[in-house]
Image (cartoon, rainbow, N blue to C red; front, side, top):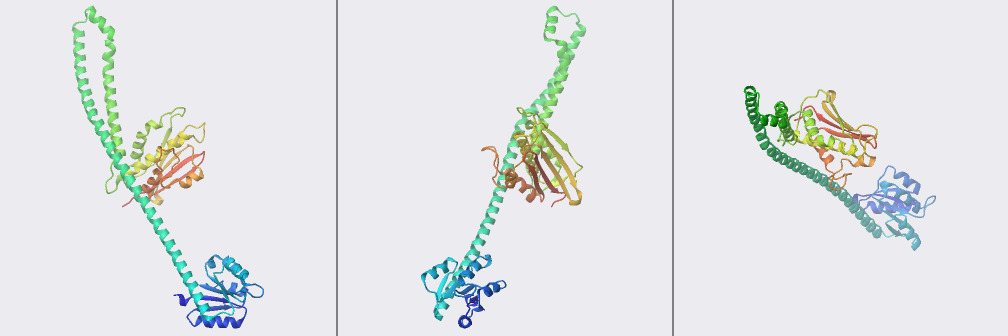
Amino acid sequence: MINEAQILAVDDTPANLEVITEMLSSVGYTVVGAISGERALKRLRSYQPDLILLDIQMPDMDGFSVCQQIKAMPEFATVPIIFISALSDIGSMVRGFSVGAVDYISKPFQELEVLMRVKTHLQLHHLTENLEAQVVARTQELEKALAQLQQSRLQLIQQEKMSAMGNLVAGVAHDINNPLGFLRGSTSNIKEYMGDLLTHLALYQQHYPDAIAAIQEHAEEIDLEFIVKDLPTLFTSMNEATARIASISKNLCNFARRDLNDKVLMDLHEGIDNTLQILKFRLKSQGERPPIDVVKDYGDVPMVMGFPGQINQVLMNLLANAIDAIDEGPSDAEAAPKITIKTITLADQNLIEIVISDNGAGMSDEVKAKAFEYLFTTKAIGQGTGLGLAIARQIIEENHGGHLTFKSTLGEGTEFRIQLPLQTD
């Protein structure tokens, strides 16, 4: 309430203080008096007024100096100060406003004028404080809404990416598996047929060892002896190749599997291996860069509860970034490019940890500070979205209750740590 405001009155004349105190107290204000600038400043150490009435002509320290010192204190910077003085020249008024006063009342003052000006400035001060509070509250609401919007957008993008990846992989696997099934069946039939033909050919050679010249010449021309020996090996290789394609198709499906609504037990090592299989072509030598050596230091870690597709997405992002960092330039030009993947059980913390480190280019302090920011990327237009690490952190920390952290030094490589709870609901 305005009429319950706290007012500090400063005047070196006790009679003036008595009049001001009685005048303001009569309408409900609480008034504290000070007979000098020094006492007023000391009083402010333990008193927070809503308004200050300040005389200008005082010994030792005039009102202008007192006003300047009060306004220099952050906690009193917005408290309105009204000068009350016999000085009524324009120069004094201008100086008063320049040091921070909001109004100027000339002595001898009139009671009604003082009350109206005090009331007006208290109302303005109250409105200003309310407005500032509303602005702060509204700003916080907007920041919260923006953060929620960004989180919702990240979730939507993640869901769309996983859905699109699942559809793509399912389509590719279907397109691969149909002809693959035909090939596997056909090679089996051809192997059987060729076995029969070779057996039949052997019977001819057994009963007719002395072939006519034309047959003998043709056998030498086509190197029949080599064909007979090589055909079984060739069919074995063909079967291994079709089995390899089937394995790749299965790995693709496992990598981009659509997650259920509930978490399931998952094998982290299987997820890492599937991801490395997908990235196998990028690990090979590229131009002058030799093949990247992947060192797997797997610990004896149990299966964890989670969404396999999402975890695989995080692994893909971190491993692809490690390859990018190595392609940008190794930390040591003479060192072989290397990515190390380590899994550890932190039993005392009830956590499983995956550590992915590389000896690539590393990050600057500026990049590290923004690494998890939404839409931040250091890659060229069309090569990066700035969503990878933001989504990865959301997946690990929000969807799985874990932690995703990293450390990196420019020119010395980068290390990411994924920590997942041993058991989650």
